Every structure is written in structure tokens, then in C-alpha cells.
Image (cartoon, rainbow over all chains, first blue to last red; front, side, top):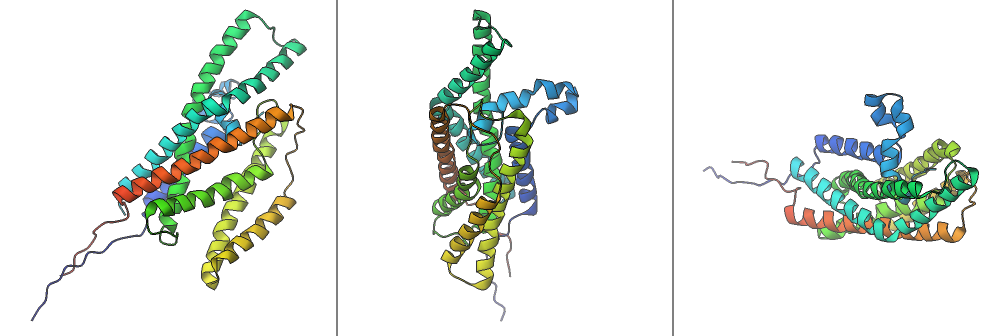
Amino acid sequence: MSESKQVNVSKTSVPVIAIVALAIIFAGGLFVVGFDQGHIFSLVYGEKAFQDLYIHELTHDMRHIAGFPCH
Amino acid sequence: MKTFLFILIVIASGATAGFILGGLNLIFVEPSLDQAIGIENQHMFASGIEKDTPEFRAQYNDYRTWQKSGQVFAGGIFGISIGSLFGIVFALSRNSLPGKIDIKKSLILAGIMWACIYFIPFLKYPANPPTVGDPETVVLRGILYLTFITISGFGAVGFYKLSKKLKTRKFIVVVGYAAFIGIAFVAMPGNPDKITTPMDLVNHFRIMSVFTVSLYWLSLGLIFGSLWNHYKPHKEITSSFN
């Protein structure tokens, strides 16, 4: 006699793709808010970005509040 | 686990908590920042770099308005960034976190991470308002701050893993981590900058920033936990056996 039964398995392992995606978002976001001194915009605007410090100025207040070093 | 739903919950909770932080900062911290930048302006007037004219004031006010809106925007980015780290740690440690419901687990993890990667590093390298930091030492200060946060974060994970391996009691983790971070606290060099800004202003800024950033962690724990509880991204029927 054969018995048919259905078992639902709850998968708890964390997908690697999600970890990688979130790790990139974490590092990128942290760099923008905490550390960029023109680096990101220099990819497009070249040396000028290091004088303009657009992202630094935009995130300036949050940089201080979150405890990142600033001037 | 439902990958897309998991990432969506992380981003939604991180962004919401981040914008809450940005909004709270406008009320509680920006007045101190305005005061500190006002001191920077006085220095510029005294040294002759700028003149205190109505044109300068108008330009400065426009600039600060833009910078304050940038602060709220940066709150969103900061919120998503830290929220992503929180999401990774939560997903990996959910089964080991105490509590039956996910909100409790999430709040406990938010408390642990608040202490290990924010508050204890803050005690070593407290946040400063503008005018305090020397531009010459900004890279060194960045390295010191990040190093201490990394030591603290990995130290906490390390002691947790060790206790699991040795099957010791939970308080051993706390004692071990406390001794470890205590040594790092004493051994690491302090902030090299000398503070010449009035301490009243510096302390007020520090208290207010701790208040709002701590509320960010609380909001993150609550929102993330509630969303996880509701949508249960860990539950997925994957196989059927016949």
C-alpha cells in the first residue's frame, strides 16, 4: 500500500544574492554619507569634483550628526 | 526565504527610519549646527576672507536651506545603508535571537547593534559640530573611527560565535566583549583635535545627536520587526514530497 503525503518545508537559509546586494548598498551608502570628498563625482567631472565637494556639502550636516569625521 | 520581499523590507524600514532621523535632526540638532557654523563665519569675518554684508547673509541663508534639505536626503541614504547591514545581521542571526515574535527579536538586535557600532564608538570618538575638526586630520580621524567600529562589531560577533562553540552561558559573551572592547578603548589613540569651541555648544550638540541617532535605531528595530512580522519573508513553501 502506498501512502501519499505532502510535507511543507520552510526554507530558512538566507539567499547569498540578497546578502551581496545589501552589502553593496551598505558600503555605498556609508561612503556617500560618511566619507566622500569628491571621489564619486570625480568619475564624471574629474579633478573639479574634489574642489566642489558637492556630496560632502550636501550630506555635511548628517555627517556631523552621525559622528563621521568632518572639518 | 523570499529574496525580493526581504530586500524590500530592509530598504523600506531603513529609508523610513532614516527620514525620521532627518526630520528629528531639523528640530533638535540643526540649531546647534547653525550656531557652530555661525562661529565659523565670525572667524572668516575676523580674518578678512569674507565680509559680513547683506549679500553674504542672503547667500549663506540660501546655502544653509539647501544643506538642511540635503541633511534629510542624507538621512534617507544613511538609513538605508545602516538598515542594510541590520537586515543582513538579522537574517543571519534570527534563529538565535531571543524572543518569540520578530518585533522583539528585531528590537533586541537593534539595541545590540546600537551599542556596539554606534554608542560605544561614540564614547571613544564623540561626534563634533562644525568648527571643531581640523581638516588636516580628517583622514586619520576617519580611519580611527572606522577601525574602532569594525573592532567593536567583529568583537561582538566573535564572542557570540565563541560562546556558541564552547556552549557557555550568555553573560560570558557580554563579559568577554566588555573586556575586549575595554582594552581597545584604552589602547586606541584619541581624537587628535583640540577643542576650542565653547564646550556648552559641543555638549549640547552631542546630547542632541545621540538622542536623534538613538531614535533612528529604535525606529529601525520597530519598523523592520513589524514589517517582518507581517510579511514573514522567511516562510516559503519550497518542496512537496509524495
